[in-house]
Length: 419
Ligand code: 3PG
Ligand code: MG
Image 1 (cartoon, rainbow, N blue to C red):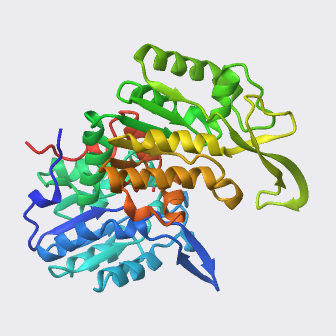
Image 2 (image 1 turned 90 degrees about the vertical axis):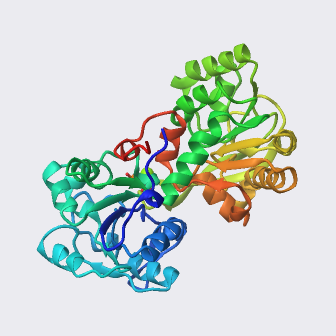
Image 3 (image 1 turned 180 degrees about the horizontal axis):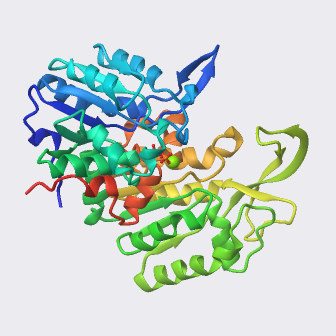
C-alpha cells in the first residue's frame, strides 16, 4: 500500500525528525575526512527543500559506517553537515551527539526553515539494538517523523524503526520522504507490472546474494542476462570447468533450480557465451588485510565453455556484450543489478561499460524505463559517466536487494499508510 509522504503533512513550525542515509564513502586527506561521493546527500535535497519551504524545523539523523557503539572520530557526521550546507546553499547546524540535554536544547532553539544534523546514531550500541529507551530519547526531539533513508530501511534500528513506533504511538505522523517514495515507486510499483519486454541484467560475485531476487524475477522477466562471477557457479552447475574463477560450489543446486524454473516459465536465461579470462599470480606485496596481492596477468578472450585450470573469468567477452546489448535494445523495462566483471580494473570494465551504454541507449532512443538496483552497478554507471542518463538509480545496496526479493523493509513498515 502507498505510504503517507512528506507532501501530505502540515509541518509549519513543527519539529520534524528526518532519518537520512548519509552513509557516504569517505577518505582521509591531510588529516581531514573528505566525502568521495555525495550522491546520497544530493538525493535528499528535494525532501529538505520542501520541508524548508513549508517552514519545518528540521532535525536530521543518520549513521556513518559501523562504529559499534564507540565515538570513532573518523566516523563523525560533521563533514557531512558542511557538505550539505554547501549543496543546499543555506546553513546546517551540527551537534556532536544525538540524544540528551544539549541536543534537546539545540533542537528547541530551531526556527522554521532551520536545519540541524545530529551526530552518528551508531555511536550508541542502543541504535542497532533498537533499544526502546534510546528510541524514546530520539523521539523526544520531534513532533513528526520522516524517513528518507531507503538505503537503511532494511535495518530494524532505533532511528529507522523504533523511533517511528514511539512517535506513532503518541499520535505523531510518520511519513516517507520524497527519495523514499521514489525508491518504493521504481523498485516496487514499476516492477509489479513492467512494460514488456522486461529484461533483467544480474551480475556481481555471488549467486547466494541474488538467488531470491532471481527466483522472484523469474516470475516477471522475459529475459535474464547473467554476468559477473556468479556466471561460474551456473557454469559449474552445468558441468563446465571454471579454472580459478570465483565460484560457490555449494550453490550449484540453487543455480540448477533457477535454470529449471527459467525453462518451465519460458524465461530466456542467458549465460555469457564468451569471457575475458586472466591468470592470477601471487605477488610479494601485501594488501591492507595482510594477504598477498594477486596480479591478474595475460588477459585474453576465452570462447570455450571450459576455463583452463590456471585462469579465471574476469569479465564477459565481446560476443556476449553484443548479444546482451541486442537484448537490452529490445527492452521496454530494464532492471540492472551487479557489474559484469571486475570493472574497478579498466582492463576488465569493458563488458560492464558496454552494458551501461546499451541501457542508456535503450532509455534515450527507445524510451525504455531503466532502473538500476543500487550498489556496485551504480558505481559502475557513474564511473562510465552515464549515471544521469537512466530512469532511476537506487541509493540502496542491501536494502535494494532485500526489497527486490519482495521482503517488507522494517523502516518502510513503520511508516503510516496513506488511506
Ligand atoms: C548501506 O550503506 O548499505 C546502508 O547505509 C546501511 O549500512 P549498514 O549495512 O552498515 O547497515
Ligand atoms: Mg551495507
